[in-house]
Image 1: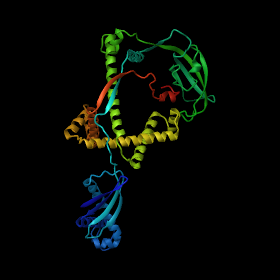
Image 2: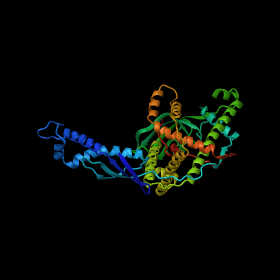
Image 3: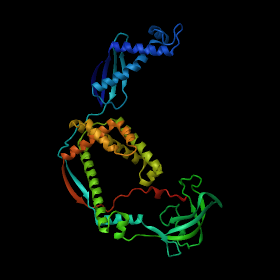
Image 4: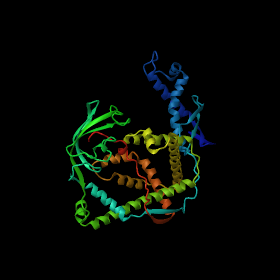
Length: 452
């Protein structure tokens, strides 16, 4: 087989491929035998009709197309491999010549990965910013631990207030008829948490133990139970008991109860150590991202639209999956974030284009520096990922099937390490921002009524 390559510009190349007459003849014979099994020819048993008869029966075009369907995919694959071409889409094929006893000649025009021009990537000056761990950070962890180990105890009071836990019996009615999921006995409701539909908890503030209150609410229009959405409901609610949280004291006994340490001082020291290790890992992650960003910003490449659109489609698919598991839809997401459909699409495309460029630039860096992953390195990496346990064999089988993908990931990891070794890195301690962004509380945005 012979092949030549011509660059056309716009990330396109055209390959002219020639397949030997012997291969063409063998493919025609195989095609004839396959067709002979499928076509009834009077006077011949299935599969026994000669090629000339089959060609007369089905037509020359059908016979030759059957042979081409076998010849071209393999010849195209070999030509890509021989010329080290990475296509990003299916080729546009043009058959130049195919006759019995002659070579098969065809052209394949294909869009390929763009060439990347790397900028300076050695000696990059970057700053590693390590967030300082404070006593307040340690206190916050301890308060969370107290929260986890707090107990609900009967309150020495008879009136429900915000923050109390009211033990209630309730029955809900729509048009004076009970409805499914609208009743519970002995349900503990934290007043002010927003676990029930809007307005329910507020109407219990001030209720006395033993009192029966009539609570009237309207289910949201987007309530997850379609039969209840938008409807007004009346609840008969009886307060059985009021409870409050009792928090453990922060002392040595608390440290012994919740950890392997004997004193609160030792527990605080361990919490600080873990927080500092976490901040160090996060600082290292940010440093690596800053290095990659710097390399990508300094590089140039003309990214094909098809690569960008493919990444847009992928990111949109992952976004929709995440929304599904969060119990949201796109409209609700746009409402929460306060962005328009056009802004969302623009952000998605910008992120997709950045993803593609980053991938292309880092691949170019791996190639430029001759970074390779040996079989031994890959085996060790897989061993680390497999670990131990009863399902280790299944994990190994799954990872071995992803061997080449893991090799690429490991090569990128080595490329990032290369950047760090060759960078000029300074370290600074920084304070945690006062207005850190908080994640969206999905549960708070989709309150439920039914008791768990």
